[in-house]
Length: 106
Picture: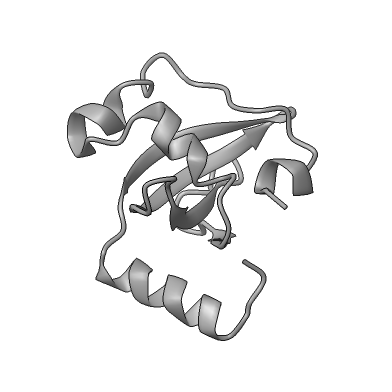
């Protein structure tokens, strides 16, 4: 089951200021970032550092092409609002692989 289905979310909402940021900085398109929320396995955890103004989360997972992506996001009303996306670093890849091996909620 995808994250959107699991949380009864209606899709994505893109902020004008962020809509091209991940593509320009990291080469990740909006469509590719959205794929991570539909592909299993994925791992979600709270973004405790950036959640002062609103609750934010991190999802790490794979695109349809198998590319490993790290995404910061929030949920507003019933839509996912992606704040930023980038390729996973070594630390995130380790966390992702540990979660899969431990069969954590992913």
